[in-house]
Image: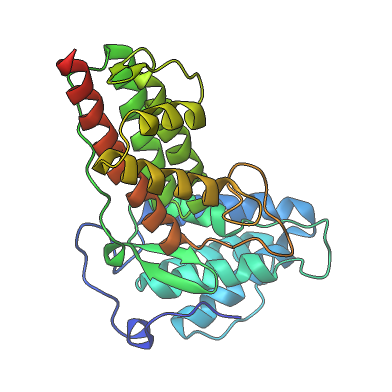
Length: 291
């Protein structure tokens, strides 16, 4: 099944903005051809090249003619790929469809999947993400919530962990790897919670070692406050995303009743977690400064 996207893009793709939207640059074409070369080592080389060439011919409106030999097949593949690349959505569709249909009757044959192609699109800042069966423009995705870069009460090592994990989560989202992005965000939420260990409250000192016990102690010392309510929301989100019958991020997905998370939902969950991170960092600073 071809990718689904705005039909007008087949004639006039969106203008370039924060990302490259109109045409695929030569550097990415070269890397795609290199991947096709690796694919072709699994069977007769020219047959594999012709398979991909046929899809690029269709994308640029050319008739697919079998080349006279392997060398000409490579040359013709390059020519038609460059022509197709003048329209980025059509090039992406052609490459994805060719990869998806390659060896579909032979499980031993492998071609790049949506994840590998999304990695390439992110590497070259191409403005689309494949979320089968849809092709989504990156610029339509909601911006990520900003998290304070240098909370005053965190040590340098903790700051480095915070920023590295936030950056990694954002990269995973750009690559269309939503489940991994949420997993990274959840890990960071649990990590930031440990900063409260040893912090004094109205009822004593936080002594828990793990996320759930730390949150439980914080709630016990802040009953009826905004912090109490927000920690309840955080716990519910954490529980849903962790549960096999929820998001299945941490403990595997229940195949009969689990909830599949798409890339747009992954961005929503990451933004929720980032909002809670900002709030927890501010609360940590408030509690520490109060001592």
